[in-house]
Length: 332
Image 1 (cartoon, rainbow, N blue to C red):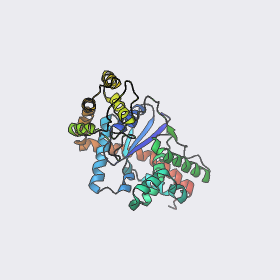
Image 2: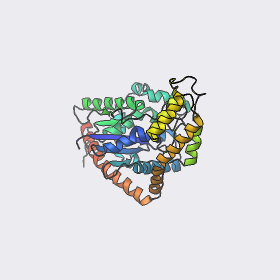
Image 3: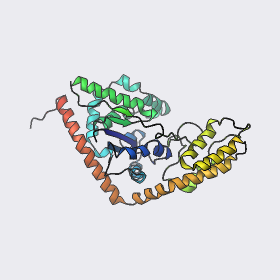
Image 4: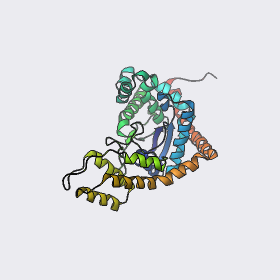
């Protein structure tokens, strides 16, 4: 395996259906063909100031969910970001060559500063630098990214090129976005009728969610008054429900409700009941695995320790090389 892939998820809570179909399913495929590093970004989550108990519980939850979904610690390196202190050292070194103007211009910083003007912290400003350190510490060639993270990856590419140029080296490969085949990258819509599913948007169904909660959320999903003409085009709020049904229901079920829609005979309440039942059928086996793994602290500890050791083996080599290039050389 000559190609290294790095990807992470913030430890701000549960994985949802959008995470699963949009990324995690592809991570599972990648672990057989790539040198894969999948991490839980607990340092990144500090920009939102979680409580100590919430921080620890969220890390545990995401780790259990990664494992329950099928990411294999024997095939991949699964680790917790804060277990690899070398990332912070590289973050500090990269920060010395990251400039205020370019960081202030990033879309993610401007958006978050606008939405939370009372919490414009330095970690938020330098978020792209920490993300770059996450990637460059393992000399990744590829990074799976969604649309909202493309600019941060471009910043990582910029920092890698800048370091290589400043120190006349080729230490860092220039990471490229990993592009999944169209059929493999599924965008899961939210239940509010707009955009993609996301926990922060409040329109998500989590993999560990209990059946009653799933049913309640789906029954509250946004709809319209129903079609008024035969075979009319579906508005986005209705197309979202059909898109979600296509990933959890049988083709026959999707076709049945599509035919009812085209004949102006659809009852959205019936459709949502079926959709809720199918989501519950899909998530229940994953939820049960999550609960089993979450209860096994010894196993979680073993996985986290093994992941930290494997990740640090790579990280220590990179930081040693970077320190020597910059001029940090010991006198003893």
